[in-house]
Length: 457
Image (cartoon, rainbow, N blue to C red; front, side, top):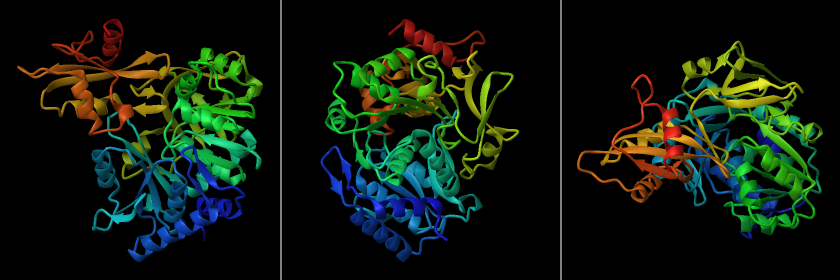
């Protein structure tokens, strides 16, 4: 029996009326993508790929990424998306965590390890393993099921009303759940999909002339609207999510276009888009995440944490049943976000119970960067924190303490980190100090870092 997402994507490409496009000028005929998917599936089967085996998929927002996903699914394997620009250390870590034997990148299928991965019952219904930052600093592998993700797409189809005559402009990366569901929904609807390999104002302006739908995180819209707003004569739907949509930005977006704005909130672990601030609740609801989407219920725990119960959540964390169990309480996923219910019945986020930094829609665990900086031969200690930023929502500041006799330079530290992790995880500002800031208990205090760096840029 064909898995639901496999069938959805194969049927969508089989009936597509438009090529899949890129703002770089690339165009791929759907039949060519189906042929490429079949070849990838055959190549995996030739290597005796186990059913439900994880396969790393290197993506760069090009039409062939969709064929790669389909080929992995047609082989009965589980896709583990990772961007082509990810640091070698990141790819090695994902291989180690998943025990994947194969990677599919723009050059084709390669074997990267020989030992067979263990049999994992958790992966029997799985389509994807998407790694997200955790509060411990170690990324967590959220396992998403075929049926559950397909069900979420059906909910979003009914909610957003995309049409076959739409032109969907997508600067979101396909290795993240937001970009992935938008692309699958567009294809399911028969819309024309235009991918943006790398976000820039110029790339967006090239696509906006024909676009009827655009999806992005608020930091993208801040950049787009920072200067004279570009022309978007056909735009009718604007999707945003991944970070809080500030009322000031929402006002700027409404001045930019009269398109319907949908502000979406959700986590990879819950299947994304658990709440939506729909046009009917605007503008009075701006500053909130709106109301729950279909088949989602929520509660606000006594400590203020927003907890979500959904039909479409992850199957669990890869190889970590203890963390899977700890992530829920009475069937509700613990988001780590603090929230309150407004008088109008909307849910408003008021902070985060954890220290995750939300930088331009990317969720980053500062401890992960602390640990990486501590490996630098001249760094004695490091502590990172998020600091409010008008364009990106938050940026990362790092306080670093040099080893005795050593000298630290922010530019050199930045280059060192760029060779070892993704660009969006590299701090914007480095503060070289004799000691880390501490709290009242004498322990290094991350909240003190934010106050310290805000006061001393």
